[in-house]
Image (cartoon, rainbow, N blue to C red; front, top):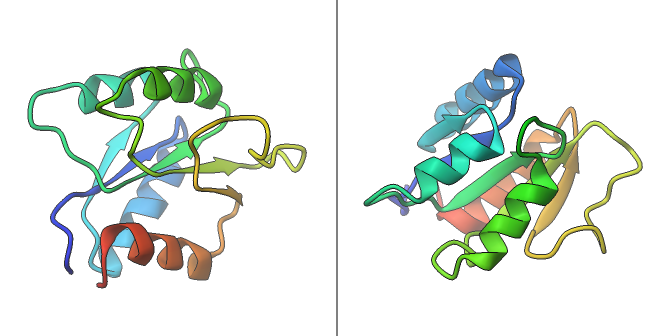
Length: 125
């Protein structure tokens, strides 16, 4: 694979995180996991942290996707990282709801679309 920066998976559901991790690993992508937006922000702000793409669950506590994206957009060192929103709520499209995301995927995610986005933002596998 061309990239050496992992994909950050942010979801409060451990089964979903593990499923996404295993699926991406099978395709040759490295991953890091966070159980909520606060944990993800702490990682992203740690020295030397790098990611190529963030897969972000919409509904988490205590820091959900809207709060996470507000923090990201306010930080010039983070705002250029591409974010894919993940949601089971059919009313959420991301469009007009959050700045700074590159795609919104409904759960369960389409593996073809997931791999397409991973290849676009992380490099060829």
